[in-house]
Image (cartoon, rainbow, N blue to C red; front, side, top):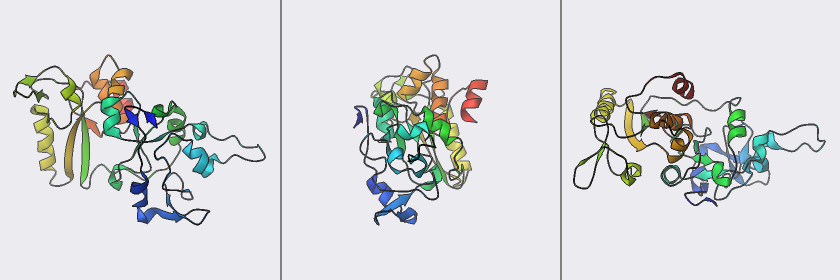
Length: 250
């Protein structure tokens, strides 16, 4: 389920592989403990394959009080699912976020979307601000995903099949198999080498299509949106520092 360009994915095998997080469900079966709560044990099917109110079903914080004295958070009733971030970025306009239950240093890459389920992430993002998740460490052998907002020759660009420099973006812009070149790309690679292993890898990728819808006036602000949404760690380009961009990345 989910939209055509951003379908729900099956994350059961990924969650089941995290043996250090295994826990026992009320029915005696093995589940996984998420960092959303020290006491939350959910089945491996949590968030997988279809748009459901996963939190309403499994999150203890979303239990409906039988006496009717407690109002549950609005995010509890919002359907969502885990998605393929690469496909969603290149083939859809859906909002996608990295799961805070699995920060980058966890070596688990899980992304979710509410809009692919005709829902909204606004309530969850607001509730998330008051939650405590495992810290995300920027160094210590980190791998970095870096967004490229647009072509700016000779700073960052691609070449076509005839090895001619491209200065306007086309379908190839969303193909991460075609490498980026340029002064800024080389500079980022030099920083990686100077880190002596503190930065293991820098992967250059395109900004998502939905970020361009949110910020149609600026490809640069659009790529900053991808940082705020957790799709990438940084963006590369000749950026102006603005209050809006600082607030989005702080």
